Length: 200
Ligand SMILES: [Zn+2]
Image (cartoon, rainbow, N blue to C red; front, side, top):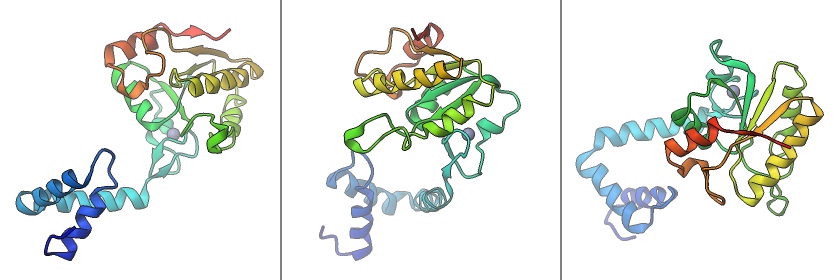
């Protein structure tokens, strides 16, 4: 892109790594930051650098965390007997915002998809099985997305629960088939969460 400034060109190119940001929006953002938002831009740069460098995954639930165990896992006020399994950290955030769930989570960081090389190991299922074997969990809520792969993942995880003698439930109706939890409105998600059903 011709801008007269090499650094500006680099900024525009870099902004394009954001989802949904094409050449035009990247250019608009870069000009906005330089013209009107230098302070915010510097804050953004510093937050980006720290997060990219220091945020890893919790050793217990695989949620994003800059400490070995995340604040949700180490919280004394959450119910250790209920574990909610989600595909992504954004699904976890959606459930936290929409429901009154106060249990623990396990984040798969994906869904079973052999063609993409995502099998049980990639989803951390050995870690999950270990967790189930600790004997603290009484109910596992499987909140994978209602897509074909999400359902296959739920089925697989349901078997892990059964093997460990733990009750497994699945989010009920309301979440559209093929939908993503992240994009479901809060009321619908809260209802689906509240009326979850036992897995066969
Ligand atoms: Zn955690």
